[in-house]
Length: 283
Length: 179
Image (cartoon, rainbow over all chains, first blue to last red; front, side):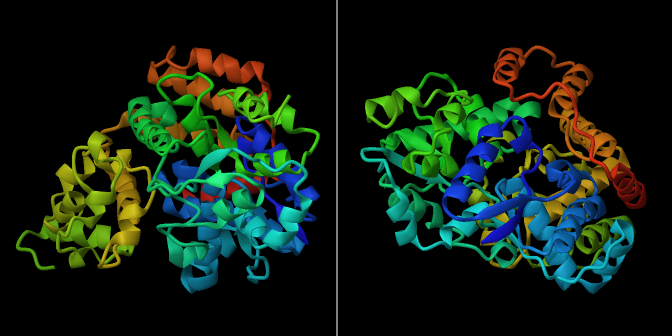
């Protein structure tokens, strides 16, 4: 399978380990990712909070580039995915807006390239085939999967997994040999971009999630979003080595025994090595 | 909805039209508020915001914190029995608050402007520059220095921005969407 790949700004900076692990994990799973040439920022929360037209036009530029590249567009970051997917939805379903956006972005939309989240891509692989590739089963690792807001909402646009109780990430992580614990906070919000401006709000939201994960005796949290990952590690009360937060692609890399895993884990703010060493999953 | 006061009618109609949401259908079941993780930090529940819009209360709505503290997680909209996407309404209200000069949460709006200026200049966000600019302008300079330094040491804060090749196209997009 060959796909265009849109990393987004975070994956080139604060979420570098997500970019590296996504590329390595996909290669190992037989998914070829080709980075979208000259991609632009999706505008994120800042565009949709202040200028609706800009919030559709900016990500539409990426839709145009993906169309030119001639492949479906896979996006690892939930926030970028949400913005580009919503722009594609508008282009597909709203004639007036499409005409206006085509003029602003200077392209002709043909709808040939689908926008998909990287989690969706991996979850649609044959689970048995993933299992067969596992070299180092994640035995003893008990985790909660945290999908966050934007992968599954709004369902009429994302059309992916169950809105209230998604299981796609759980199934992947289970195939890697880990145990996933069910909890009621799978699709709650981490506070997203409020981390910098309203730290107390995000600290409150993160505390709820950390407390809930501890209550069900999870050893780690698994996410598919750089905002969730950094808020969960950066905005918690005490930053020790308890309850690290992994990207699902990092766990794939770990279970498939890919050589770069150590490098990814060293980039975390909450060091996951003591946990992995205690389970003999790292040296 | 019918109103005696023309200004109230105008406000309601404007929010309804810009957000594209059937605001008049809200019957205050409070399902949105029950699932809202931001209520502990906001001044109105989401259903209160919708009610105030139904009643044409422009000033109270546009100068509220809630519209800015909403993180657009969209839980409310998914659960609304009347199909109101409240996050879309919140976005419309933020845009209207900016136009009316009634922004309550000035730092959040400052963050958005700083972020978008970075995108306008480079085509992508230059995180380090954006954060430093925001910190200086907001006056909240010291709160994140230790964690910022840690990120920097780990190589997660590139020192130089990456400018995309087609920056002219991005400038056009900004110019043609700013009214």
